[in-house]
Length: 138
Image 1: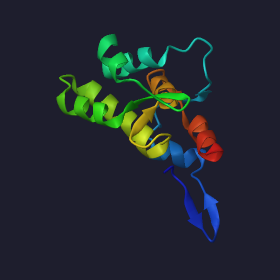
Image 2: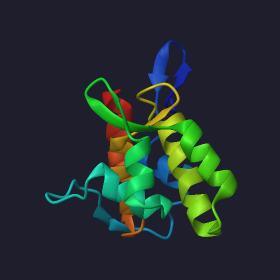
Image 3: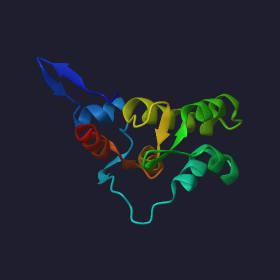
């Protein structure tokens, strides 16, 4: 389920400012809004970067759900528990929260669209407008 509240029969979603507070985006440059790049890395490459795992490890775990690629939550959970790099553990956990709580597409799986948003965090670009748009679209 995405972040949405019902008040008096009306569905409400957080504002840009509320999303920034929820996601602790205060250090991100607000003047640099997220936009989808033309030459984005593949889902496989983004997962390799986020998880720190090999191409073989990631490729073996990517699944097809309808017309979308995704990775099962179970694989990421196992990685969080066993990964030797603490920063990568946190990155994988954060990716999992985005995919399971904020933007769930396939039950128990992290959708490839989430990795694109997550990949932009390292670039200090605010994701809040994109998250807000995704919430309204869903």
